[in-house]
Amino acid sequence: MNKIVNIDWSNLGFTYTRTDLRYVSIWNDGNWDDGKLVEDNTITISEGSTALHYGQQCFEGLKAYRTKDGRIQLFRPDQNSKRLNNSCRRLLMPEVPEEKFIEACLQVVKANEAFVPPYGTGATLYLRPYVIGIGDNLGVKPAPQYLFGVFCSPVGAYFKGGLAPVNFTVSDYDRAAPSGTGAAKVGGNYAGSLLPHEQATKRGFADAIYLDPATHVKIEEVGAANFFGITKDDKFITPKSDSILPSITKYSLMHVAKEYLGLEVIEGDVFIDKLDIFKEAGACGTAAVISPIGGIEYKGKLHVFHSETEVGPITRKLYDTLCGIQFGDVEAPEGWIVEAK
Ligand code: PLP
Ligand code: COI
Image 1 (cartoon, helix red, strand yellow):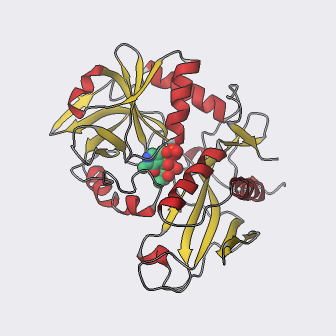
Image 2 (tube, rainbow, N blue to C red):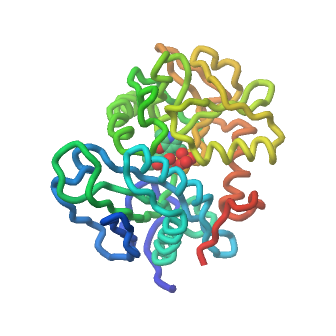
């Protein structure tokens, strides 16, 4: 395909750009249809759709990367498929077979090849798969029909500055309940985060940090990203909890930290009043990639890690290795890369 689009790739933020085609498939009477690519970027659904009233919907986020030699590749789409299906099970929605999920992602990437940013610009093509309950309905019950869609948008950095440290503040709000839907990627978790996010950004912070909802003493999430810290004796520590979203980036970084950087890796408690064990800290996620955490405000005091302006050396190595794998410059562990041919 030789289409050229006029986009300032290096200055993209995390915003919506309409691309040419998106994938839509409908579930009815126990089966998904074959699905198709469509031009229309709007969807018409019943006013009674459970997605609109009862939050019966979930989504995913993954990226397509342009390699130095011009190929396009997806990073661990099987993991997004598994997590989407966990979210579907939690909300009584039909699962999307892994093969269908990956095929839909590949179709969308190939159909919008002109929107895959060039190598070296830092930008990527973000894919947004989602499942929503649709069809006429009134009572609180699962929908009679479902829609599985995938659209895409070229994106740049999620937090301002990319690999530049940003500060976060601890919110008094909870993101999720102890046995609620925190581990599922469902819209309700994000609706509840809009107010704490706004409160944080109005005060000059990049986002809100959420503590564990049962005791409020441990870090759980950094906005729409997971937390990791590097201790003064070079251990990679990241929270373990049933109410955080299991981040694919986080699990990938745990592997990179251990196998590529030789660090000890621990999933465990990160106490908000014991931040001085860390010399570096970061937020990680598909959208966020790695955002170095300059400092965390808690109870009126800012705890600064490595620096508010400089990236720590281990955070930089983690970032370079992860991005190297994603953009095809560093050899990936088996099964992590799916090429869009
Ligand atoms: N935590 C939340 C709440 C998120 O929305 C995301 C984004 O998907 C993450 C963490 C990071 O997860 P992943 O690395 O799989 O994108
Ligand atoms: C992601 O990192 O993919 C996210 O989902 C974060 C946010 C845009 C919801």
